[in-house]
Amino acid sequence: MKGVVFNLLEDAVVREHGLLAWDGLLEMAGLEGAYTSLGSYPDSEVIRLVDAASAALGLSAGEVLRWFGRSAIPLLRERYEMFFTSHQSAQSFVASINDIIHPEVRKLYAGAGCPHFHFHDLDDGRIGLAYQSPRRMCRLAHGFIEGAADHYGDQVEIEHLSCMLDGHPVCRIALDWSR
Image 1 (cartoon, one colour):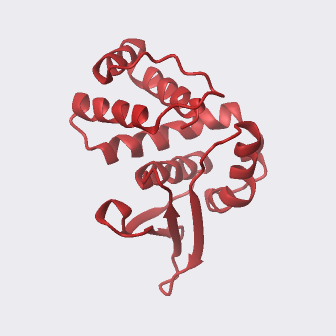
Image 2 (image 1 turned 90 degrees about the horizontal axis):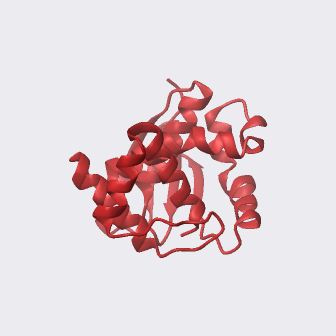
Image 3 (image 1 turned 45 degrees about the horizontal axis):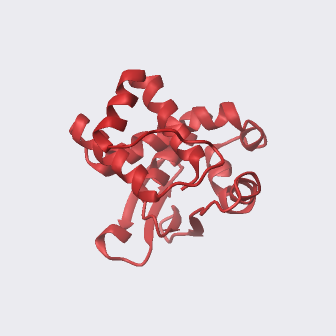
């Protein structure tokens, strides 16, 4: 996983809980915490940090990932405003992930392993999102979507229809932007 993800996690934890909380997470996870944005680090290290936060806060790992995704959007906007300014809504922003944002991420961070999102219309009028990643962090994607909705002042209802964590080959998520 690219170091920028660790940097975002550190910034989100410090912003909401203070520097001592980040140091405590590193200690609980048995990690050094010297992450450079362009560096690559084992996925297991972010999992150890999420597990430490989960234990410290009494939340599930999925809830921690969701919080992180939601909290990371304002930090991403501060760092990469150009990804946000061309969109008027969270729905437009989220729909641009594969075609605009992830290719730029790969340019900025060589070797970045971005997840793939497949969007399609559902029969009930919602937007279907198929999430596929070997990291299986669909709850992080869920949080990013919520954070984007917060940023643009939009409402979204997110329903997980099936999940890789339950043995499915992809996560299937329904997005309802109509509210």
